[in-house]
Length: 256
Image: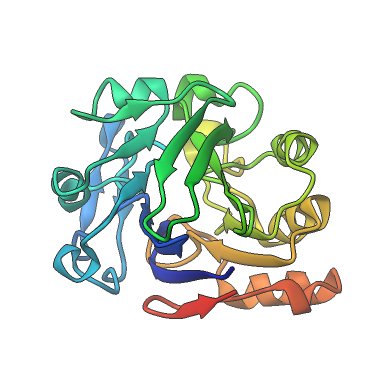
């Protein structure tokens, strides 16, 4: 059975799988500046490809974390009230009304309207920066989607650690599609260390997972992303993995 992925911009995407419609990290605000703690600023530079009205109905949101506006902005928070299920980590669930918290490696079953049984969502680790980054960047969730007759899908969330990718591979030996949050995001709070995978890291994660398809997200639309699609294409070519790369621009879809 196939999966269709529509990139909406930044980490926001629409996943159509097993008759279900899932959205990752909804951020629908128009381009603007956001002022964070300490007067730091992050800037959205491009619009989201679809509006909330164009995306609904949605069966579930996979929310990696809520503490950063590029992963959940004001319009995204309002959008959550239109979705019957929001899966996230424990600390984010405390700050999002009605969200369901998943512990590490915990599973959640969603009934499939295609008659194929259920889609299992497993919360997997993610490290939003170098070792020890949780104290600054906060808790983040990744997800793996599995089901009878379905491709196995890894959604990395904001993760910069290849060791985390290796942990996921140990638990899920077969990954068909990897949605990798890339963009080489950086912050002065962690001395410019990577907050997400850089392009070479995304290619290496694909190799570690032996994923049949890699679909990068989170590499355009925000000023703090430091590597875009051109560097992703170059890194995958240098790793001899071009045949596994599906590079989408906002609004673009792929059926895999």
